[in-house]
Amino acid sequence: MRIPLRLFEAVAMTFVSTPFLPLLACFLFLAEAPSAFAQSSEAPPRPADPYADPANDPYNILRYIASNTLAAIALVLLLLTAVSQTWLMRKMGGKFMLSMLIAEYTFATGIALRFGLHANPESKGLYIIENLLVVLSPCGFIAADYVLLGRLATFLESGQYLLISPRRITLVFVLSDVFTFLMQATGGSITISNNADTIKMGQNIRSVYRLVELSEGYFGKLSTTEGYFYGLDTLPLFIAIVVYTPFWPGRFIPDAANVPQRIDSDKVELDRLRSRHNPYNDNERSWGHGSRAALA
Image: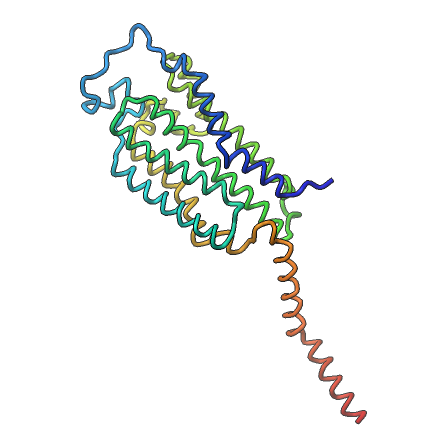
C-alpha cells in the first residue's frame, strides 16, 4: 500500500511547525531545574554592577552584555524576510514551506529576547528561552528543505535518482531532525547547571553539533564573543533562508492539490510544441499537398 506523500509532510509539520517540540524542550529544561537553579553553599557573591565586568561575572551566562544595536539589525532583517515570504506564500502558494516560516518567526523571537538580556544580563530564565529559540529554530529550516526536496522530485518525476524515495525522504530526515532537536535541548538544559560534572556532560552532548565553538569550553572565546554569534551563526542562517525570497518555491512548484493538474497541462503543452516544430510533420504536410495536387 502506497502512503500519500502529504501524510509524510503532515508528520513533518506536526513535529516542526507546531508547539510540540518547543513544549517538549521546555519540559526537558524544567526537568533539569532542580540542579540547574540550585545555588551551592559556596556560591560567589553577585557583583554590585553587572555591567562593570561581565566577562568575569559568574552569574552572566553569556559573559558579555548583549548589544541592542546588533540585535535590532538582526531582528529587522529576519522579520523582513519572514513577512515577505509570508506574503509570497499567500500570493503564490508554497504551503509546504510553512515550517520554515514558523521557524523564522521563532528565530526572530529569540533574537528579540536579547534586548531583555541586555537589560537583565544575569537572568537565567531569559537566557534559557533565548537559547532554546535560537538554537532549535534551524530545525524548521532544515525540515522545509527536506519537504521541498521530496516535492521537487515528485513534481519533476525524478524520484528514481534519489537514494531515498520521495515518499519517505521527508519522514526519514525529519525524524533525524527531531533527534537533533532533542539532543540539543538536553545538552543546552544541563549546561546551565552549577554542577561541574553536569556542565561537562552537557558540553559533550552539544559539542556534536557545535564542536568548534565548545572545543574551547563553554566559556571559550567563540562562546563569549558576540560578534562570532552573529557572524558565524546568525548570518549563515539568514543567508540560507533569505535566498528563497527571490526564488520562492511556490512560484515553480504548486501545492499538492494542484500538482497532477499542473503536470498534465505541462505535458499537453509540451506535446503541442513538439508537434508544431517536428520536421517530419512538415514533410508529411508537404507530401500530402503535393499528392493531392498530382491527383487533381
